Image 1 (cartoon, protein in one colour):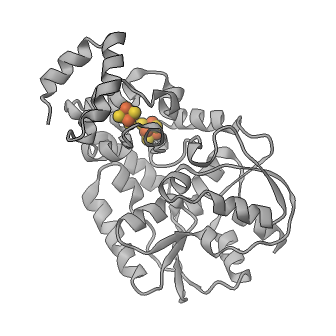
Image 2 (cartoon, helix red, strand yellow):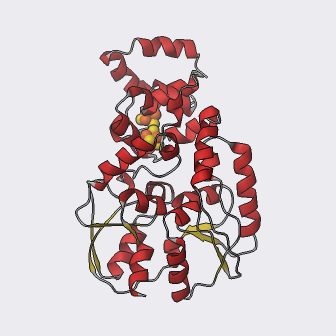
Image 3 (cartoon, helix red, strand yellow):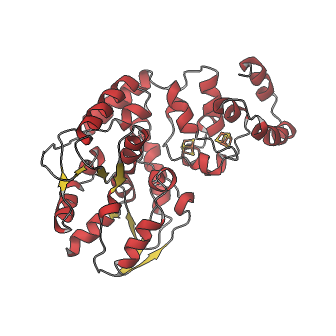
Amino acid sequence: MINPKVISRILANTDLKTKMRLAKVVPKLGKADEVTRCMLCPNMCLHVCPVFDAERRLTVSPSVKARLAYLGETDDAIYHCLPCDACKNACPMDISVNDNLRAFRGGELALKAIEKFEKSIKVQTEEREGRILYFPGCRTFESDLFDTTVEVLEKLGVDFALTNVDCCGMPYYELGLIDKFKEKIAKLRQAASRYEGVISNCPHCVHVMRENGIKAAHILAVLKPVKIGGDVSYHDPCILARKLDVVKEPRKLLAEMGFEVHEPVFSGKDTHCCGYGGVYRYVAPDMAEKVAERRRKHFDYEIVTACPSCKMALKGKDIIELMADVL
Ligand code: SF4
Ligand code: SF4
């Protein structure tokens, strides 16, 4: 690991010439850990970071957040991350700032944010038996998608079970509250072990489950087209497109449903975050809303998506809701 003092000295003297040199050298630091490479980087992904775009202060820019974490500064900035992974998508070294910052979180701000999250969540728990487990995730309840999803799954003949486990632990994970996260995911793993697999409306839940050894898929995997027709603009949820690699599937489904699918500025893996993913909206709600407001301006037609958080932020519809209208 490179000495932090040396790095501080280099960065304190970062003029344009040094930045240009760093841009060439940093990708070659093969053996250095990701935080070190990121903090040395002259913010090469700054142009895609929605948090920087909304807050307009360098302290929350990708490489400065990495620098603060590395130097042991307890600045709140390390919590100002969506996490959208737009940085990773643009990074020449394939580094995710958020993935690296998680290990440095878990302080006072994490406890405050989790308190807000816990107060805001109203999960109804119900149990029933079936072949696969339907795990809605807390945001499906928050966005009023639960009853609609149950209705659509039943009408499509999907044999699904429900469990009284209410949380995959994502907010605890993102805030660095690891003990609590482990408790939550262990309960879910135990419940899931009785079924062939798990489906969820929430890309974040699916990602967290997969990372923790649970066989999970986004609910799109069990949907079947019903004829509707019209014009829609599709918004790619960051985690669905970038972490789960589900980009073609929703477009194919919408096309089979007779829709003309229009692309917004920034789509597919280059999508722009809606602002409501992760826990940023419990840390900086005004800024999360600013990110959402900016994203809403990118669409020409009714916004359709496949994530409860994106649906709320963009005031759009989930594909499930389009189906429920005609089933
Ligand atoms: S994520 Fe990559 S491009 Fe962005 S600051 Fe870190 S090293 Fe640089
Ligand atoms: S994950 Fe998103 S919000 Fe966080 S630093 Fe990367 S681009 Fe910015």
